[in-house]
Image 1: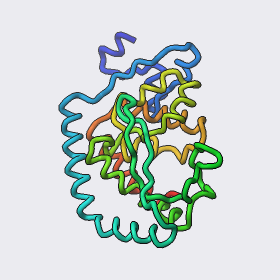
Image 2 (image 1 turned 90 degrees about the horizontal axis):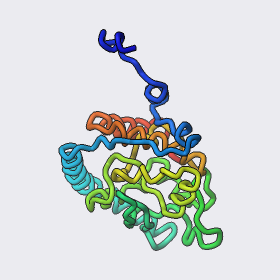
Image 3 (image 1 turned 45 degrees about the vertical axis):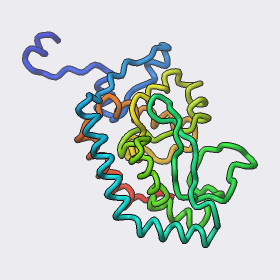
Image 4 (image 1 turned 180 degrees about the horizontal axis):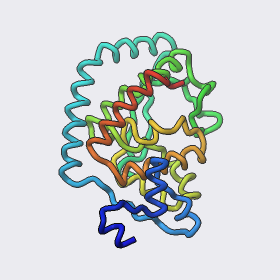
Length: 239
């Protein structure tokens, strides 16, 4: 193997080969051995600062351009289902620091008052008719540009999750907190590779994509994810 390496022949171990083949990080090996994987966060200070500058400039510009659309959606929600227009919920950010995530409300009022926290899913009966349209084209996510401007979110990163669900997943994956070593995002590597994960199993699958991103994050990968997200919205809209 050493001689092959000297000749410039690429040699991959099973973990690296799995990543190349699936575009996600293998966690089953570490779970079986009860080990914590070492994920070297690829965010150097220069990349992190540049990423933040792009987030601020991009969010500010989009908020200005999309303000008329914000206003139309605000009025439509008010007319069809009343106030509150915005849905504000606590999520976990960088290093598990909680923040208030802002979205346009797409569900009935007090959707969790009877059954408590639930995994969001396709064909959720709690979603209003207008809410279903907004979700279809991800328009309900637009207010999160405010979170990007404030520094709670980046344009690209693992999607923020609630403490309640993070604790449930961590019972099955002790090193789930690794996903909080980077700032969460509006979209991510998991979102362009995996369908809606409305269960613990689905979120565990998405976690493998999140770790792949954390390990390999770059400006090129961020740009690819943004373009892929736009393509996904056009070709395979939400629910």
